[in-house]
Image (cartoon, rainbow, N blue to C red; front, side, top):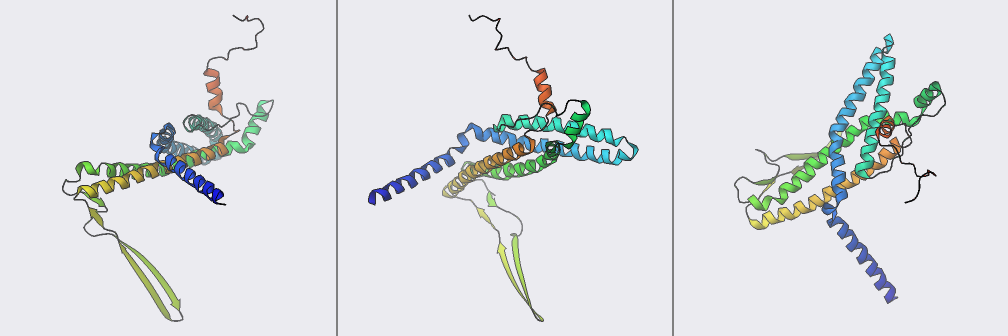
Length: 272
C-alpha cells in the first residue's frame, strides 16, 4: 500500500513537473511564433476578406434585378473559393494543419460540375469562412495588443522605475468606479443594493516594487503565449472543418504552375 501511494505521488509530481516545463518553455518554441505570425496576419486578411465578400454579395444581390448581378455573384463565389484556398494553404503552412482540398468538381460535363459546385456544402462553408476570419483577426489583435504589449511593458519597468510619473493601472483625474446594482421588488416596496468597486493605480517608487511588476509581467507573457497558442489550435480545427474536401481553385493554379512531378515508375530509366 505504501509503495502504491509513493508511486502515485511520484506520478503526480512527474505530471506537475512536465506541465510546469511546458508552461515555462512556451516562449522558446518555434511553434509559438508561427502561431503568432498566423494570428497577426489574421487581422489584415480578415478585414480584406470581410470587405470583399460583403461588398461583392451586396452588389450582386442589388444588381440581380437587371441580370448583371447573377454573373457577378458567380464571380464572387469563385474568387471566394480561391481566397479560401489561399487561406487553407496559409493555415497548413503556419499552423501545420493538414487540410485536404478537392482540385476538381464532381461531374463529367461542365453543367454537372457547375451544379455540383453550387450544391456542395463545402462551397458555402468556404465562402462563409472568409468573413468569419475577421472575428479571429479582431480577437488576435486584442490579445496581442493588450496581453503581449502589457507584459513587455511590465518586464521593462525595472529599467526606468525611478522616472517620475510612472504608474501601473488606470490613471485619470478620478479613479474609475464599477457599480453593481440589484433591485428587488416586493408588492409596492423596491429594495436596491448598490455595490461600488473603485479601481485605482499603483505608483512604483522602489526597486522591489519594480521587480515584483516584472515577475507579474513574466506570468502575463507566458499566459498570453499559451492563450494565443490555444486560439491558433482552435482556429486550425475550425479551418479544417470548414475547408477540408472543398473545391480549391488556388490549389489547382499552384499545381499547374509548379514543377512537373518526376516519373518514378519509368521502366526505360536505368539504375546508376
